[in-house]
Length: 140
Image: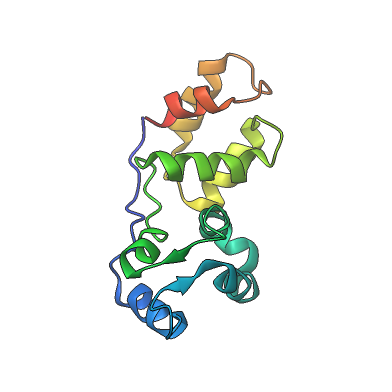
């Protein structure tokens, strides 16, 4: 439906450097539970998708490749889609169009005004909540 921008930062030098800074010398892996507070303190809500992915792995220790994949935010990845939806619906099981519009600006989904109009027409009612399955259909 829309042109998604590239959101795979997993192979950037910054991510590799971040891993090297926080890797546990004894484990030779990054302890996620120890890293989450660093992300929260550094960027808080601006990193909500990264935090959601890390929280899913809270009790894990990640090698460099596993850590790097936490910075891949492509919607084509099922886990990323689930995390994005969880962030948007905030535990309510649905999102509203107003929420989608705000998220489009915040997360840079790349939705145009025309995309939004089509989505509004798709549900036929402006204030009808968007469920996970409807959201998946709209962005695929």
